[in-house]
Image (cartoon, rainbow, N blue to C red; front, side, top):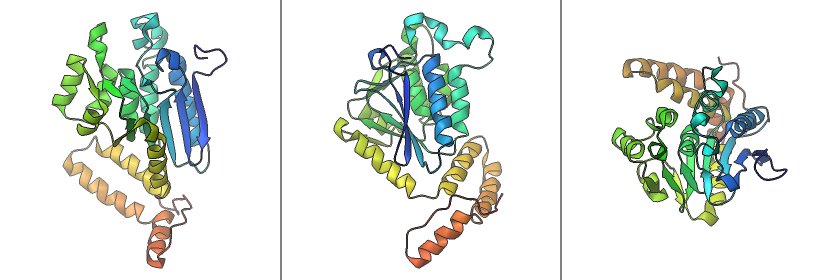
Length: 269
């Protein structure tokens, strides 16, 4: 449970075509602890098991913080594997789960996004922020380093920018985060939900099979050199063109109508 009486630490609820997963620890600036990470994981599993969903939204309660990182009230042991019996951390297991996620994951940044919050944001495919949000990696100021965040952050922005954020611990504004490529959009706080809803609508108009296959291809090609990535992409487009969604998309284009996505692979492997 969260620090507030009778309030779950994380709330997962379906809103239209998306599952909204909200960290509900506003009094702790939506800080992470093992319970929060496990419940985010459970919310993602619930989304996967819910037919017809087209996206997952990850956010925090209130307007002050998306996520302020690890809850340090119990000391630096929050950074290690629980009990040292597990070779991976709770956050690491969540990151591995998200990497294989077929649904687009949207970060709705409603306030401060620092330390582990930057890690959560970096796991997401898309990110929209309120203009008052701040971003940063202040771990060096408490004697540690954003090791796990670094794994994901270095794929989003250039090495000089990664170095600056990690080594100085300074916070940056939402417009600056957008400028360096951390965000897809920055909007006034009152327009944040509308911006997220508009993004969900765009995803809902796309082929679910194409999105799922595309996300898998992006993850795979991140690990490949050019000579590996190009033949892989050639094989993938050949497979994608044989799916039921591809046939429906082409028919809809020629008929000048909206596609009626079935979501099935149509027999293509």
